[in-house]
Structure formats: structure tokens, C-alpha cells
Length: 296
Image (cartoon, rainbow, N blue to C red; front, side):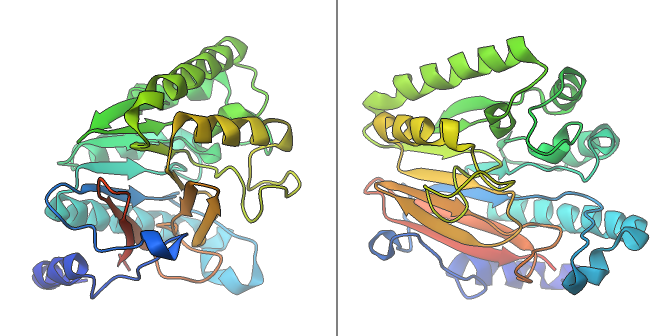
């Protein structure tokens, strides 16, 4: 998108002409553009330099790592500029901030200075020393917090509580004291928001489940040993929405009253959808829209 076209693009995005509405329950989908609506830009998996071994994704091969790394950063800069113009109540980074955790301090201090709206972040598996099925290492946690300030956070905005968690603590971690502190924190936060009458939005990098709440353990979900407990605690807190990333594809599911929305990646998508972010807007009556803003 050329700079001269940005204003027209923003106008189209705000009107829904450049977006793809999606909702996990059709009856909840609406324009949600009233003055009282909460607006969250959800930017998932910027993952600078993302490489895939899938035959259909030769453009994301390891051989093109440097080229893709630079292009991913440029695309993220473009997305931040668009989000600044959209001026949402919150920019929620969905995690996997770089392919390799060591690159986070090289790029993100500068990029965060470009952001002109409030922001939160839910760290991903690639934001620590990546080991499939393992929790974060202590060195990785300190490095992440050194750039982003914290690895989990809750915040009240327009009468809504947003709880941004660290889903890597779903797995066994060598940072045992930090993991115990996190589990105490998330339980306390969920208990605290019970009085918010459902005006609660949860967020993490990995979704509770990828396709079905009874599915077996995989790279894409919360372990079954913890999953049912967590899903029930989310419902008991009154949460109505869960924003996730990680899957590199569009997904929307429902678990009773909880809508689980997983946005496209900013780097590349396994379902070959275009790159971009989601603009989530919700009203007091829980009607909402979840529109796609393409950032090529």
C-alpha cells in the first residue's frame, strides 16, 4: 500500500469495505461502531523471519530468512502506522514477536516507540528459547520483560477488563517460582472480574483448543490435563471473549458462552490467507464485529 493511498484505505477499513467480518456466533456479529464500543486492534504473530518447511510455502524457506525478516519488519511498521490512524482503545500484540527470541531486543524497542495507542502483549512460544511443549526459561522471561515490561497483565478500559496471559505457563517451566506466581495471579484475576457482569476479554498466544475442546494434546492447544479446568474458570469469571494467535490461520470457535477468536498471522498464514490484523469491536450488549484489515 502506497503512502498516498493510506487515508483511503483507512476509510474503507472503518466502513467494513476492506474487511472480512467473522464471528463465532452469528447472532453476536454486528457493526459495533457506536461511541460506547470498545475497539481492539489484534496483531498476531509478526514473527520476523518466520520459516516454514511446508511445500506450499517455499516463499518462507530458511534460505530466504534475511529477505523475509526485513519484509516482516517493514510490514509491521506499516500495520502500526495504520493502527495509529485507526486509533483503537488498545493494540493487543498476540505474541511470537520474532522467529528467534534473541532478536526481540534488536527490533522491538524501536518499534514500540512508533505505537501511539495503548498496547498490551501476550508472549508466544518463539519469544523464549523455543522447545515444543515446554514453558518459558528464566533468561527468556527476563529478556522479554526487559523489552515489554511484563509478560502478563490485566487492564480496565471503558468498563471492560482485558486479561492478557502467558500461555507458555500452561507447560512445565524451569522458571518454577515465576510459573507458580503466574498461576496465583491468573486465578486471582479471574476471581476479581466475576463482578464485571461478563465484560471480560481474555487473551493469550495459544488458544485453549484448536478445533474441539476434547481434542488430544498438540502444538496448538492447552494440555488436556489443564484445559477443562481453565475453560471452566473462564466461564465462571463471566468472560465472553477470548482472543488468540499462534495458529497462523483464521479460526473462530464457541465454548458455551465464550467466543474464541484466532486471528491471521502478520508474517504468513498456513491457510494462505493474506497478512494483516483484526479489528475487534464490542458493545455493552456483547454484540461485536471482528473485521480483517489487510496489510500486504
